[in-house]
Image (cartoon, rainbow, N blue to C red; front, side, top):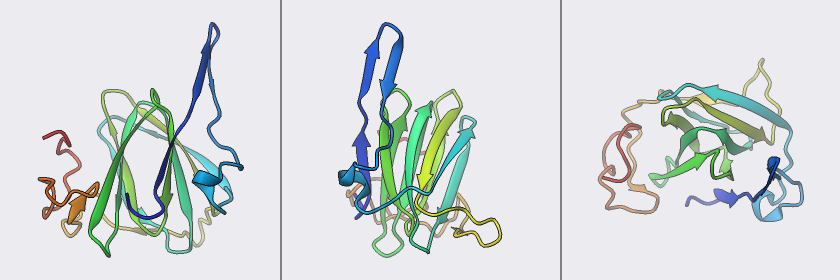
Length: 167
């Protein structure tokens, strides 16, 4: 994984009423380090839609939590050419830390809408947003490795959100 990306599996406790899970705690130093969450947002995305690419150049870190459906989170480093791909699902809760200086985004995969709660370390300012954007299908985004694997068949080609990772 790229430096600073952390995937923290979350524990769900089940009983006859349903389930309970802690999804964010300020004492999770293994995940947060010195970060402090400033805002929480809910994003609902219909199947097959892609919300990418963007990055934050003023020190923001994002924490992604899929609570319904499944998303493919992709994080790309322009400097090294590394692309990390993480599948996250409401069925298998995990909190994913994404340092904002990396290009990142996600795609709702599967046949149901995806619900994503994400926490940010900076407040969003609509008058001066900390977001740099590029198109989801930007042909210049070409990974040199995927999840640390330089032999991945997707290496050396424009990123294809629809290419199945199991091929």
